[in-house]
Length: 137
Ligand SMILES: CC(C)(COP(=O)(O)OP(=O)(O)OC[C@H]1O[C@@H](n2cnc3c(N)ncnc32)[C@H](O)[C@@H]1OP(=O)(O)O)[C@@H](O)C(=O)NCCC(=O)NCCS
Image (cartoon, rainbow, N blue to C red; front, side, top):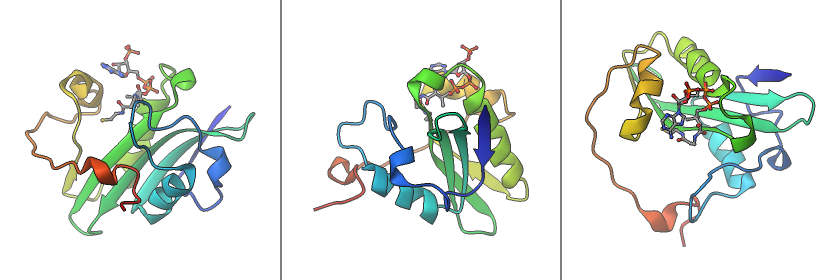
C-alpha cells in the first residue's frame, strides 16, 4: 500500500533510491534527503511493504505569496499508477492559500499538469550543470 507523507523527518537516505533518472550528475541520497528536509513543503509516497520512498514532490517558498515546485519524480517501477497525480493534488492542497504556484516542465508534460487546472506559462532558466549534484566544487 502507498502511504503519503508531508514530512521527510522520519526518512533516512537508504529509503531514497532510483531517483534522478537520466541526470548525469545526480544528488546523492544524503543530499536528496537534505533537499527534502530544507524544502518549504514536501509530499512523499512511501511503499509500506518495502519501506522505500517511491515518489516525491517538493516546494520552495517565501512563505507568503509565492511557491515554486522544482522536483517531481516517481521511480520507474511505480509510474502510471496515479502516484504522481496524487503527489500534485496533495501539494496543491497544501499550497492552496498562495497566490503564485509555479513550475517548469517539458512541453510533453503540460497535459499532465493541465489536469490539475494549471494553465501553461512561459519561463526562462539558468542551469549550472557543475552544481547538479548539489555539492559544487
Ligand atoms: C511525470 C511523473 C512524475 C508522473 O508520475 P506517475 O506516477 O506515472 O503519474 P500518474 O500515474 O499520476 O499519471 C501518468 C500520466 O503522466 C503523464 N506523463 C508522464 N510522463 C510523461 C512524459 N514523459 N510525456 C508525456 N506524458 C507523461 C501521462 O499523461 C500519463 O498519463 P497516462 O497514464 O494517461 O498515459 C513520472 O513519469 C516521472 O517521475 N517522470 C520522470 C521525472 C519527470 O519528468 N518529472 C516531472 C518534472 S516537471
